[in-house]
Length: 159
Image (cartoon, rainbow, N blue to C red; front, side, top):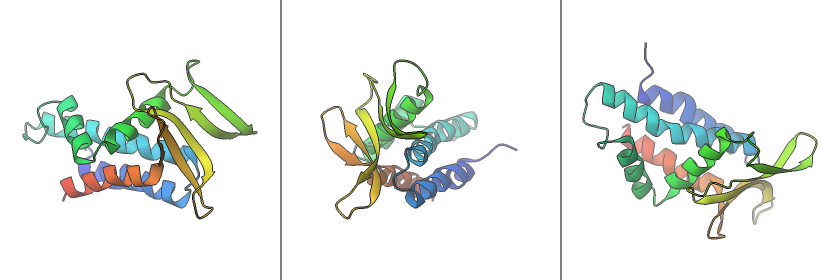
């Protein structure tokens, strides 16, 4: 039996979001959450497209644009981070290793995406370890609120 968008959302998107909340400084958890939240668009589009339900916004790029507009650009950031994940082991991507087995930051040289770097293990103003990302216009943005905007979009759409 095929997984519905609701099942994908609760099993993968919400599950990975919770893992990233429970491990706020973990790049691994942030990447997994970004991949699930980004791929939710693909799953939603193809599920409804096969059923001709009219809920696809015309095309996958059309749906992505709709989500990006509805989340004030948060979806583009999440998608850029997710796209970098699949290319992590290619030579054109680099990471700074701060200790054995710990990735401190990952440069994301995707000329089409808005994210430049993903940085983990940084402290916020309260001293908590969190994941940040740096946009190509040099803004440093916390990952969790950006992910939350995308997850909240899906939560509202699937009601």
